[in-house]
Image (cartoon, rainbow, N blue to C red; front, top):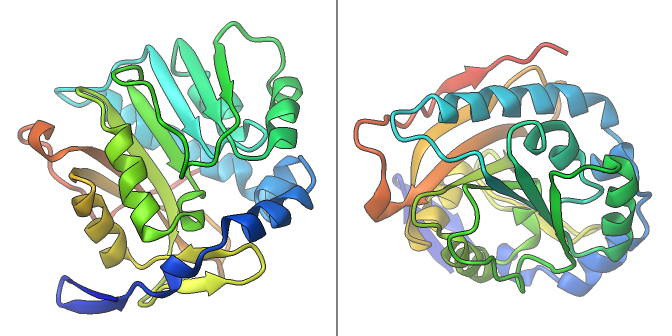
Length: 246
């Protein structure tokens, strides 16, 4: 299957070959540590968090900002993003993660905290968020494990009347690239936007993460709202770059 996006033809066939069983087997062999969650690149965690924090603060400064009551951490792993970013900015944070060992470890990694809500043991392809519960749904470095169909279905289920969905993902340069080791894909920019549109979402802000080591994929953050609920006058900042100090 191919899709036309911004005058570029992109093959989607590889994304449909994702195996959830193989992915689950791979992650069951990974240690429940920050280094494990980041593929041996634990040293980039602070740079990543600082870039995400700046992006989130910019969302809070919008004329129609998301609330700060409840957030959902998708593909939460051991709770790295929850502990270092979301808990600092929301009254309550729920975590959803398909690996039960990671979820159990998250309780210790985060520690006792009244801001931590529910721990949901689901893959995103099966998870159904509670309607109108979340002000921000944060999805980072996990969507490569979803087929295109499940990607679209997941975000349709995530739509919140007044909330914001944030996606932070690696981008390939042109084609869909598949990793047979963990059964994941890295999608190009145009395909990500096509999938957002297919899910009924509008990308109203987009920022490139900087200060990451050379040789890694480009990483971008996307702020999304239902197409009918886009904030008037909020431009999509496609080429803005966040520079993090670590």
